[in-house]
Image (cartoon, rainbow, N blue to C red; front, side, top):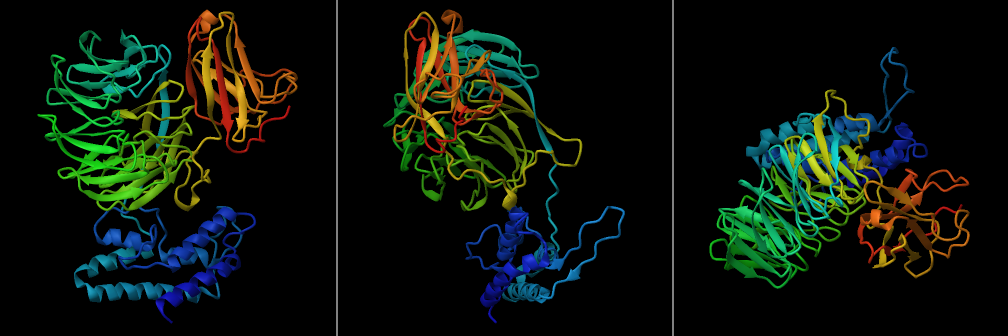
Length: 635
């Protein structure tokens, strides 16, 4: 019988062996049963040839070990242990004081033995063909058969919120860290220096409009932008050194005494860091969507004209450019003479830094806004398809993928064998860098789209409601993993295949009404039909309220279909920035509606809007429902 025939027979018999072996009851434990079935099938179909495209199998683990690479696939038990688990009958579990459970071999266990003999035959054949890798091959087979792992077990990590800061109108972009100080800008135009330990402000500098681009610290200065102005401030006192007129589109880069500033007008401008004088400017064909990156004598930047540019730092002349299929909003990362970046054409690219020649590209399921991070030969990057990808830097092959169910737009952090990243689902994730196994996660209350920043063991993030969080990433004192651990691999939780939100904004506009602040709008489906039963939450950091569920109900019987509304008195006191989120009211249905119900399930991104007294105090915010539009409550 050929190896292929044997594999097919083995795989076919697995379907019958599992229920007969009473390992998993498909009716009571469908998840466990399916995981065991899939694992056994992958073992049966293992192909040890280098041309095989099978991933996350014993083949992949074996080849990585032979080539002296770190094993980074989802851990798979060795065949002997797998066969012992799958093809033996187990007696009911007893108490810890009882004698060890005895195992009785299954009558069809010989099939597993034949499979093992086949694997050993492949190993010996490989030794005969390539004697130089024989010892490594045999050693790898032994480690795989007995399920041993070269890597040390990762310590358990715990994510703990230390403090939160919102400032005037909420924080509008990612912060910057330098020593014991954190720098952040707000929607009301303030630049803050905060104490890392306490979150208390050390100084503040007021600009004239929202700070929506992350500040940058270099030398003795912090660079922050507001509207059409870039400011250079003393990092210890906040005193202004100079300012330059430019509508900054992304965070600048500072290197060699120059500040490289991307502009909304499509120009990359080099400014003298000491004097604030322009040195040169380079024009692209669209707004610069990414931050520039400096390496050697060149600066690299992406544009909405679909190109990634390499520019000479001294002269501002183009060295080369590379065209993608859409905007380049992803800030490049550089490692080993290779430039990695994403595009809104859904690809992750690897280019030669000197020539711009493509080395490889990897297709994701949606736009790639996030900036890649490279560590230990692996590229970590998120996509708007809701997946974090771990790709081999040399080949672009996927080592593992982790789905969150909502878009990933921010860059990750990688340190201490861990990957930290935020998602549109409002969760901060801590996962093992080698396997993608979730070790911990923290609920931030709203989407996390800004880049994460690290200061020692503290992670700084900004959620979709303008809250700056300082989160401690601490190694737990106990070797046990945290209670909220979510297994990776085949046991990963079931998440939505579609990473989009159930609701997205429709028509939004503002009007004047000096008598009250009024938030209102209509909720419809994609066909324009009214949708009832969903509430809108308004939140300004100090006050959070819910609207009655949309449409007519016991709390507002006279309301029109799909309509929602919240009215606030004292418009002059309630002006400022508010965040709106639509969701489902899950508090008990009582005679009186609870406007401050905490059991609110968000079903959209949080969207900020400014209430300006007295000209813009009536905010119309329509919403469009895309799925499950009949799932609202019917009180």
